[in-house]
Image (cartoon, rainbow, N blue to C red; front, side, top):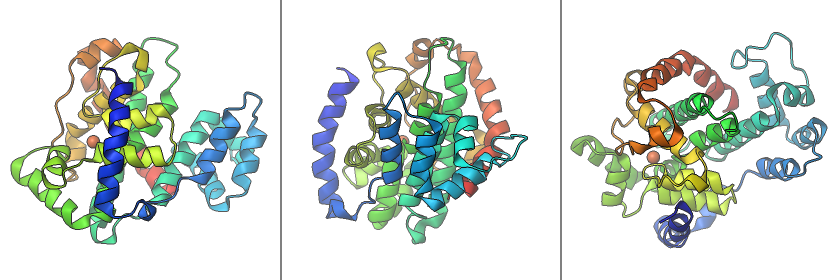
Length: 302
Ligand SMILES: [Fe+2]
Protein backbone atom coordinates (compact mmCIF):
# COMPACT_ATOMS: atom_id res chain seq x y z
CA UNK A 1 0.00 0.00 0.00
CA UNK A 2 1.38 3.44 -0.85
CA UNK A 3 1.08 6.62 1.15
CA UNK A 4 -1.16 8.11 -1.52
CA UNK A 5 -3.70 5.30 -1.26
CA UNK A 6 -3.81 5.54 2.53
CA UNK A 7 -4.33 9.30 2.35
CA UNK A 8 -7.15 8.95 -0.12
CA UNK A 9 -8.93 6.56 2.23
CA UNK A 10 -8.37 8.89 5.13
CA UNK A 11 -9.91 11.75 3.20
CA UNK A 12 -13.33 10.11 2.98
CA UNK A 13 -13.26 8.57 6.48
CA UNK A 14 -11.92 11.63 8.25
CA UNK A 15 -14.32 13.99 6.56
CA UNK A 16 -17.41 12.08 7.70
CA UNK A 17 -16.17 11.40 11.22
CA UNK A 18 -14.84 14.87 12.02
CA UNK A 19 -17.91 16.66 10.62
CA UNK A 20 -20.09 14.47 12.82
CA UNK A 21 -17.91 15.01 15.89
CA UNK A 22 -17.67 18.77 15.84
CA UNK A 23 -21.20 19.32 14.52
CA UNK A 24 -20.36 21.73 11.73
CA UNK A 25 -17.20 22.19 9.72
CA UNK A 26 -18.01 25.91 9.59
CA UNK A 27 -16.79 26.12 13.17
CA UNK A 28 -13.21 25.40 12.08
CA UNK A 29 -10.78 28.26 11.47
CA UNK A 30 -10.72 29.64 7.93
CA UNK A 31 -7.77 28.94 5.62
CA UNK A 32 -4.74 31.17 5.92
CA UNK A 33 -5.41 33.59 3.06
CA UNK A 34 -2.00 35.23 2.96
CA UNK A 35 -0.31 31.84 2.82
CA UNK A 36 -2.39 30.87 -0.22
CA UNK A 37 -1.70 34.16 -1.96
CA UNK A 38 2.00 33.70 -1.38
CA UNK A 39 1.93 30.08 -2.53
CA UNK A 40 0.24 31.19 -5.74
CA UNK A 41 2.93 33.76 -6.37
CA UNK A 42 5.66 31.22 -5.63
CA UNK A 43 4.23 28.82 -8.17
CA UNK A 44 5.02 31.48 -10.73
CA UNK A 45 8.69 30.96 -11.68
CA UNK A 46 9.06 34.68 -12.41
CA UNK A 47 8.02 35.72 -8.87
CA UNK A 48 10.35 38.11 -7.07
CA UNK A 49 10.96 39.35 -3.55
CA UNK A 50 9.01 42.43 -4.63
CA UNK A 51 5.88 40.34 -5.45
CA UNK A 52 5.99 38.67 -2.03
CA UNK A 53 6.52 42.00 -0.33
CA UNK A 54 3.50 43.53 -2.07
CA UNK A 55 1.22 40.72 -0.89
CA UNK A 56 2.48 41.01 2.66
CA UNK A 57 2.11 44.80 2.53
CA UNK A 58 -1.65 44.26 2.68
CA UNK A 59 -1.37 42.43 5.98
CA UNK A 60 0.16 44.82 8.48
CA UNK A 61 0.15 42.34 11.36
CA UNK A 62 1.96 39.71 9.31
CA UNK A 63 4.46 42.27 8.02
CA UNK A 64 5.24 43.30 11.59
CA UNK A 65 5.79 39.65 12.60
CA UNK A 66 8.14 38.97 9.70
CA UNK A 67 10.17 42.09 10.48
CA UNK A 68 10.30 41.35 14.23
CA UNK A 69 11.46 37.83 13.54
CA UNK A 70 14.01 38.84 10.90
CA UNK A 71 15.56 41.28 13.35
CA UNK A 72 15.50 38.87 16.29
CA UNK A 73 18.15 36.61 17.72
CA UNK A 74 16.35 33.83 15.86
CA UNK A 75 18.24 34.76 12.71
CA UNK A 76 21.15 36.43 14.44
CA UNK A 77 21.76 38.84 11.57
CA UNK A 78 24.07 41.78 12.04
CA UNK A 79 22.26 44.36 9.94
CA UNK A 80 18.82 45.86 10.51
CA UNK A 81 16.05 44.55 8.29
CA UNK A 82 13.65 47.39 7.65
CA UNK A 83 11.47 46.10 4.81
CA UNK A 84 9.78 42.85 3.88
CA UNK A 85 11.59 42.93 0.55
CA UNK A 86 14.89 42.95 2.41
CA UNK A 87 13.64 40.14 4.69
CA UNK A 88 12.72 38.00 1.68
CA UNK A 89 16.21 38.47 0.26
CA UNK A 90 17.89 37.56 3.56
CA UNK A 91 15.63 34.75 4.83
CA UNK A 92 14.84 33.37 1.40
CA UNK A 93 11.48 32.90 -0.29
CA UNK A 94 10.89 29.44 1.22
CA UNK A 95 11.88 30.75 4.63
CA UNK A 96 9.33 33.56 4.47
CA UNK A 97 6.71 31.10 3.24
CA UNK A 98 7.24 28.82 6.24
CA UNK A 99 7.10 31.82 8.59
CA UNK A 100 3.86 33.02 7.06
CA UNK A 101 2.33 29.56 7.31
CA UNK A 102 3.41 29.15 10.94
CA UNK A 103 2.14 32.60 11.92
CA UNK A 104 -1.15 32.03 10.06
CA UNK A 105 -1.81 28.71 11.80
CA UNK A 106 -0.95 30.08 15.24
CA UNK A 107 -3.24 33.04 14.49
CA UNK A 108 -6.06 30.88 13.17
CA UNK A 109 -6.32 28.96 16.42
CA UNK A 110 -5.57 31.97 18.58
CA UNK A 111 -4.65 30.71 21.99
CA UNK A 112 -6.73 27.58 21.47
CA UNK A 113 -9.24 26.86 24.16
CA UNK A 114 -8.81 29.33 27.01
CA UNK A 115 -9.68 26.61 29.52
CA UNK A 116 -6.77 24.66 28.17
CA UNK A 117 -4.17 27.37 27.67
CA UNK A 118 -1.50 25.36 29.47
CA UNK A 119 -2.02 22.50 27.02
CA UNK A 120 -1.98 24.89 24.04
CA UNK A 121 1.30 26.34 25.22
CA UNK A 122 2.88 22.89 25.54
CA UNK A 123 1.39 21.94 22.19
CA UNK A 124 3.17 24.78 20.37
CA UNK A 125 6.43 24.09 22.17
CA UNK A 126 6.23 20.46 21.05
CA UNK A 127 5.28 21.40 17.47
CA UNK A 128 8.13 23.91 17.25
CA UNK A 129 10.58 21.43 18.72
CA UNK A 130 9.55 18.92 16.03
CA UNK A 131 9.89 21.67 13.39
CA UNK A 132 13.42 22.49 14.59
CA UNK A 133 14.35 18.80 14.87
CA UNK A 134 12.99 18.18 11.36
CA UNK A 135 15.24 20.92 10.01
CA UNK A 136 18.25 19.49 11.89
CA UNK A 137 17.57 16.02 10.44
CA UNK A 138 16.89 17.44 6.95
CA UNK A 139 20.26 19.23 6.99
CA UNK A 140 22.05 15.99 7.85
CA UNK A 141 20.63 14.08 4.90
CA UNK A 142 23.63 13.30 2.77
CA UNK A 143 22.04 13.89 -0.56
CA UNK A 144 22.69 17.47 -1.55
CA UNK A 145 19.47 17.49 -3.44
CA UNK A 146 17.25 17.32 -0.39
CA UNK A 147 15.70 20.73 -0.94
CA UNK A 148 12.96 20.50 1.66
CA UNK A 149 14.40 22.07 4.80
CA UNK A 150 11.70 24.72 5.04
CA UNK A 151 8.95 22.31 4.04
CA UNK A 152 10.16 19.99 6.82
CA UNK A 153 9.93 22.93 9.22
CA UNK A 154 6.35 23.71 8.13
CA UNK A 155 5.40 20.04 8.38
CA UNK A 156 6.83 19.94 11.91
CA UNK A 157 4.71 22.91 12.96
CA UNK A 158 1.59 21.34 11.47
CA UNK A 159 1.97 17.61 12.14
CA UNK A 160 -0.20 17.50 15.29
CA UNK A 161 -2.66 20.29 14.34
CA UNK A 162 -5.58 17.86 14.78
CA UNK A 163 -4.91 17.90 18.54
CA UNK A 164 -5.90 21.58 18.58
CA UNK A 165 -9.20 20.72 16.91
CA UNK A 166 -9.93 18.31 19.75
CA UNK A 167 -8.70 20.64 22.43
CA UNK A 168 -10.60 23.64 21.00
CA UNK A 169 -13.84 22.03 19.82
CA UNK A 170 -14.20 18.81 21.85
CA UNK A 171 -12.62 20.02 25.03
CA UNK A 172 -14.41 17.68 27.44
CA UNK A 173 -13.46 14.62 25.42
CA UNK A 174 -9.95 15.98 25.10
CA UNK A 175 -9.60 16.26 28.88
CA UNK A 176 -10.64 12.58 29.08
CA UNK A 177 -8.10 11.72 26.35
CA UNK A 178 -5.24 13.28 28.31
CA UNK A 179 -6.35 11.53 31.50
CA UNK A 180 -6.62 8.17 29.72
CA UNK A 181 -3.18 8.63 28.12
CA UNK A 182 -1.63 9.57 31.48
CA UNK A 183 -3.34 6.79 33.48
CA UNK A 184 -2.52 4.07 30.96
CA UNK A 185 0.84 5.39 29.74
CA UNK A 186 -0.21 5.32 26.12
CA UNK A 187 0.23 7.82 23.28
CA UNK A 188 -2.45 10.48 22.83
CA UNK A 189 -3.40 8.95 19.49
CA UNK A 190 -4.19 5.63 21.20
CA UNK A 191 -6.30 7.41 23.82
CA UNK A 192 -8.10 9.45 21.14
CA UNK A 193 -9.08 6.33 19.22
CA UNK A 194 -10.38 4.83 22.46
CA UNK A 195 -12.30 7.89 23.78
CA UNK A 196 -13.27 9.83 20.64
CA UNK A 197 -13.30 7.10 18.00
CA UNK A 198 -11.09 9.23 15.75
CA UNK A 199 -7.62 10.68 16.15
CA UNK A 200 -5.58 13.84 15.59
CA UNK A 201 -4.08 12.50 12.35
CA UNK A 202 -7.55 12.19 10.84
CA UNK A 203 -8.76 15.50 12.25
CA UNK A 204 -5.62 17.34 11.11
CA UNK A 205 -5.77 15.78 7.66
CA UNK A 206 -9.36 16.92 7.38
CA UNK A 207 -8.43 20.50 8.24
CA UNK A 208 -5.38 20.52 5.95
CA UNK A 209 -7.50 19.22 3.10
CA UNK A 210 -10.16 21.86 3.74
CA UNK A 211 -7.38 24.46 3.63
CA UNK A 212 -5.92 22.96 0.41
CA UNK A 213 -2.45 22.62 1.90
CA UNK A 214 0.16 20.84 -0.26
CA UNK A 215 0.03 17.02 -0.44
CA UNK A 216 3.37 16.65 1.38
CA UNK A 217 2.03 18.52 4.41
CA UNK A 218 -1.23 16.56 4.35
CA UNK A 219 0.67 13.25 4.27
CA UNK A 220 2.84 14.29 7.21
CA UNK A 221 -0.24 15.18 9.25
CA UNK A 222 -2.06 11.99 8.30
CA UNK A 223 0.77 9.49 8.60
CA UNK A 224 3.46 10.79 10.98
CA UNK A 225 2.73 8.00 13.48
CA UNK A 226 2.65 5.19 10.92
CA UNK A 227 4.55 6.09 7.77
CA UNK A 228 4.94 3.72 4.86
CA UNK A 229 8.49 4.25 3.69
CA UNK A 230 8.02 4.52 -0.04
CA UNK A 231 10.84 6.16 -2.02
CA UNK A 232 8.51 7.77 -4.54
CA UNK A 233 6.73 9.72 -1.84
CA UNK A 234 9.79 11.74 -0.82
CA UNK A 235 11.58 12.11 2.48
CA UNK A 236 9.67 14.76 4.40
CA UNK A 237 7.26 12.27 5.99
CA UNK A 238 10.07 9.99 7.32
CA UNK A 239 11.87 13.12 8.59
CA UNK A 240 8.77 14.17 10.55
CA UNK A 241 8.20 10.63 11.87
CA UNK A 242 11.76 10.53 13.20
CA UNK A 243 11.70 14.12 14.49
CA UNK A 244 8.46 13.53 16.40
CA UNK A 245 9.80 10.33 17.97
CA UNK A 246 13.08 11.94 19.04
CA UNK A 247 11.37 15.01 20.50
CA UNK A 248 9.02 12.83 22.55
CA UNK A 249 12.06 11.17 24.07
CA UNK A 250 14.03 14.34 24.66
CA UNK A 251 14.37 14.70 28.44
CA UNK A 252 14.43 18.48 28.55
CA UNK A 253 11.14 18.78 26.67
CA UNK A 254 9.42 16.01 28.57
CA UNK A 255 10.34 17.76 31.77
CA UNK A 256 7.94 20.52 30.67
CA UNK A 257 4.99 18.14 31.00
CA UNK A 258 3.93 17.30 27.45
CA UNK A 259 2.47 13.79 26.96
CA UNK A 260 5.54 11.60 27.08
CA UNK A 261 4.28 8.62 25.16
CA UNK A 262 4.23 8.26 21.43
CA UNK A 263 3.90 5.39 18.99
CA UNK A 264 6.90 3.20 18.15
CA UNK A 265 9.60 4.33 15.75
CA UNK A 266 9.68 2.59 12.40
CA UNK A 267 13.35 1.61 12.72
CA UNK A 268 13.73 1.36 8.95
CA UNK A 269 13.60 5.15 8.87
CA UNK A 270 17.36 5.44 9.61
CA UNK A 271 18.33 3.34 6.59
CA UNK A 272 15.65 4.97 4.48
CA UNK A 273 17.10 8.42 5.14
CA UNK A 274 20.66 7.04 5.07
CA UNK A 275 21.47 8.48 8.49
CA UNK A 276 23.58 6.44 10.98
CA UNK A 277 21.61 5.59 14.15
CA UNK A 278 24.31 6.98 16.40
CA UNK A 279 23.42 10.46 15.12
CA UNK A 280 20.46 10.41 17.51
CA UNK A 281 22.45 11.90 20.41
CA UNK A 282 23.89 14.66 18.20
CA UNK A 283 20.40 15.57 17.00
CA UNK A 284 19.08 15.80 20.56
CA UNK A 285 22.04 17.89 21.66
CA UNK A 286 21.59 20.25 18.74
CA UNK A 287 17.88 20.60 19.50
CA UNK A 288 18.62 21.47 23.12
CA UNK A 289 21.10 24.08 21.94
CA UNK A 290 18.56 25.57 19.55
CA UNK A 291 15.49 25.44 21.73
CA UNK A 292 15.95 29.01 22.91
CA UNK A 293 15.39 30.02 19.29
CA UNK A 294 12.10 28.14 19.29
CA UNK A 295 10.95 30.15 22.30
CA UNK A 296 11.85 33.36 20.47
CA UNK A 297 10.01 32.19 17.39
CA UNK A 298 6.85 31.42 19.33
CA UNK A 299 6.92 34.73 21.18
CA UNK A 300 7.39 36.73 18.01
CA UNK A 301 4.84 35.06 15.75
CA UNK A 302 1.99 34.69 18.21
FE1 LIG B 1 0.99 13.06 16.57
